[in-house]
Image 1 (cartoon, rainbow, N blue to C red):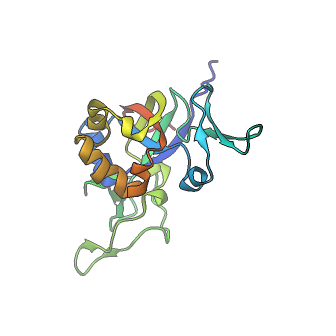
Image 2 (cartoon, rainbow, N blue to C red):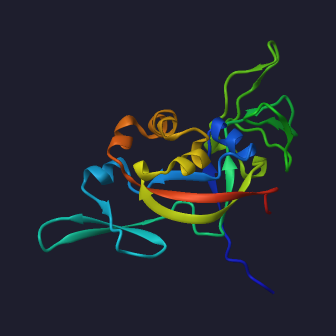
Length: 206
């Protein structure tokens, strides 16, 4: 029997990102290697190091360094990511509404939970979207497979890659995509980021 080492992890995408994936426009995703706190503390990625984790160092003095290992939050090439997206629940235990407001049948019986917002019977409207992080595995409709992973400065993104990431050009990527998610300062500090490339896999593995 062949044992697969492939792992599945959740990835949170916005409604805009989900729609871009569904349209075939988004095939890349970037997140910072270090947190804002770690950057302020003086840590930087050691580009001379290799391995599954990013080796980050902070110079303490001329002879001492502090080392911080940061694994890629998405895993490795070949691993899969099931997409969590903002959702609404329908007035049914068997269906839910996804980010594009399409009615999707649940993969398993729906279990009522306080994490889900109620249907407004009076107006046939929703009171607001459910946070993507509360979306359960069985409700995911997108499974991605990682095809490449690299580390680069966020401002080093090429025009071609910005189109794969956010569908718009470099300026739109910075102002309309990166800054709203990570802050204006995060762009101008030009942090090191994980850049993953992925392809869509139909269905979700059990």
